[in-house]
Image 1: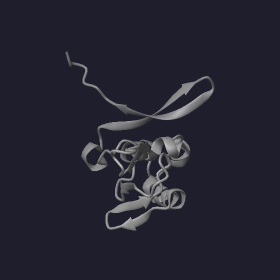
Image 2 (image 1 turned 30 degrees about the horizontal axis):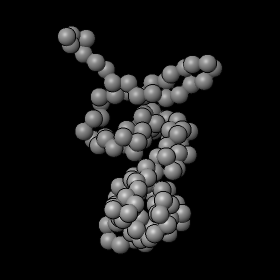
Image 3 (image 1 turned 180 degrees about the vertical axis):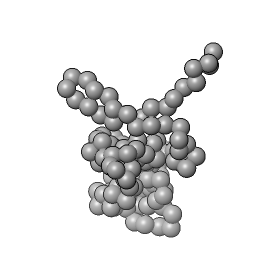
Image 4 (image 1 turned 45 degrees about the vertical axis):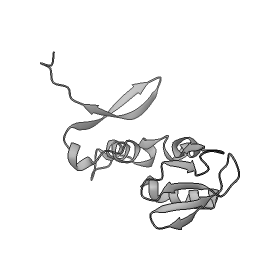
Length: 129
C-alpha cells in the first residue's frame, strides 16, 4: 500500500514524531517551524499548525508524485487479480471502499501513440435519460 511506503518517507523528510493517531512536530517547508502535522491513518495532506503565521498545506500527491504516477507498473494485473491496477487506483488513489463497489467496474486498457495504460471502466445504463 502507498501509505506503508509513504509514512517512512514523511518521517525521514519532515522529521515527524509519531504521537498517537498523528504524525506531529514535522518541520514545515514553508516557515521552518516544527508545527507540521497529519493524521497517521490518512497522511494525504500535511498542515502547518501555525494558522495565523503560516497555515501552509501540502498534498503528498504533489510532494511524492512517483508514488502516484504509474499505477500500471506499481500494481500490475495478474492471474490472481486481473483488476489489480484498477483496485489499487480506486482504493489508494481515490479512497473507495472496494467491498462496496466490487462488481461495478472492470479494468480495461487504453492505447494511444504506441503507449498503453490500464483504465477503470464503469458500465452506464443504456436507458438513462
